[in-house]
Image (cartoon, rainbow, N blue to C red):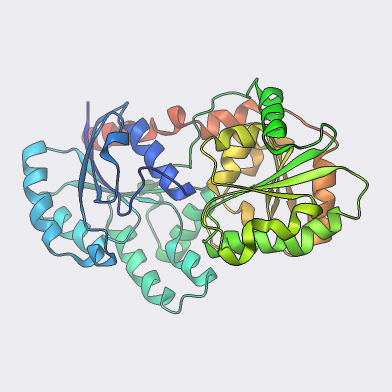
Length: 374
């Protein structure tokens, strides 16, 4: 088996956000195909690492990104383990990756979860042009780049003139490999838990609620989408799941008589995905592929999304499980919700072929085998 070193620059165990969950599942599935060592932050629960060695060497402080001592820690680890490659999650350690690449000749892969500078530009960060230069240098110096969507790959190649033979798509994955058979049972469980009437349709919104794009999306549900739904003659409930809701929202108590329920953070979010008729994704910023949307479709729920919110998802394999509305056209968004409630088609098999982790992760050992023989 190949030996792979992964550098994950922020805490992901336990996971609360889509980005954290992606890292956790990526390394767990990679460890089924290779001998994996992960170097990450101190603020990880090592007991949750399944099938691989987790070294909590990175400080929790932001200054970990410029901690020169890391080179001295990683060097003996690399010498003693004879790794076949190192995978850097995100481009932030470019300076360190370059040092190690030059010193050890170690095959270097960058796994980008977004085009990072675009994400920060969309959230109004003034320093995004600096990140754009740094990100480009990182991707150009890597031996190979993985992007989470064809859109991101195309953007990166155009932005930084990357060699397309040294790039590929490695999408966000799901553990589900077929349409779930227990959706009705999950819906009944959610109804019982939140006293949802038997005739009410269940609409779901989920996300880390102190993340500005998610918080803004919640505001649009409260102020623009739900008022339009209230004018329709359909019984429904919108269930909002997620942690870190600002206290000023008072757990959405003011909206309880407007068909909105706040469930907070739930441990069994898959149950809610499977129990929902429609997942709402009115996101207008933040960049990257929305993990929650990929999961929802995999768990059999139809997603209604803005065009921006659906950036990066491979729409040709979604069938009728993804309905798109123009950004900020809340009349269109509401109409798409109503259309989604009229029919419930199974998720296409092609979706699972594309997004199941077991299929996705095979690309890495195949690439390393190709590299070692080429």
